[in-house]
Length: 449
Image 1 (tube, rainbow, N blue to C red):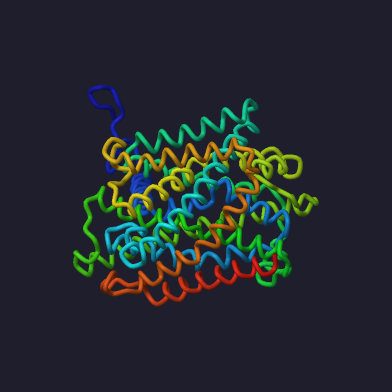
Image 2 (cartoon, helix red, strand yellow; image 1 turned 45 degrees about the vertical axis):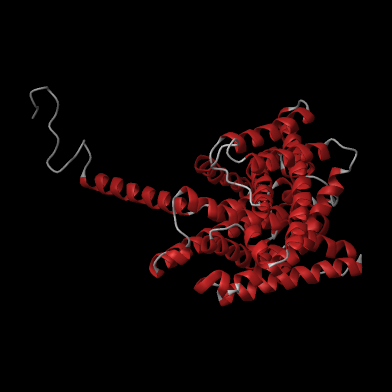
């Protein structure tokens, strides 16, 4: 039977030519997409912080750990995950409860000279890290396309700087969130190589630990790369930035039920972000161990060198994924490094700050970002050995993290600062454990070296 326009009539109960089953599937698919979008929307500072931890310099450190010591370094991400989770959860809580960044809070509790010293060390370590990251991005682009590494390095720095200067926070944070997906390239890499998972499990539980200076120093470098001071300052400040953008009050000023909901969001966000960070670190170490170390390649200086070494061993596809990951993680991490320095400096000196503001509104804050990028490029093109600078910046991070962690733990436990939202018992246990473990590792490095 046809209608007046000559088209066939739809069967009763159908819509748009779809039967009841198809309609039901469409509804379920729509609901699933909404749930995914809602879940992704709840992620923010924690996800970006965790992803930024796996920057090109971190990739180089993890690659060197796997290449030099094989499967015997795989226990480190397993240990760092609960420690990192506790530390970053506390930092996020401090920002959300007080409405101030970490440096501003530390400045209220500890002597000004001590806070300024820590921020100064943060600037040095972050600047070296930025230089290493943009250089690694330039090298990765050169591996993929040919051309001038110098030109690509300058272009990478310029692109990152322009994004920070001219895109407001509410748009930039969305870009950074989607950029975290680049980390999944490293899970793709591990699928291209052969892995003895039984051996992996044995070495995670019972690693062959060598009590040598090289081994201990590598452990400190891995810890310093993973539990990095710049992450403490960034996640705290981004919780504050997120509050300002979305017009949210500090937790002490809202009902208990709403406060618990916000703390749950922070917990979920941080669990996901830190899990992603440590899983990627584990994957990179494992890739280097089963490919480079297995073939006798034990000396890796840069992430680009690791990618190049993978090509004859694991194939062009593994090389391609590894190289793309370097570029993507660099774009994600460089703004976090520069931004954390700017936030910490602005908080200590009381300057107006925030990536949501235009440069003309926060000239000093953005000046720190520009100076960090310029000095970082200067380090790249100076006579200094960038590889040694990179490695030792990770070691410096591992050392200076100890006093910053100790100060943060004291702050997060004080009711006069945190009210009823002091760190939980589990956070205090694992947070102090992180402080002690990193302190012992740093002392052992100096004793054994």
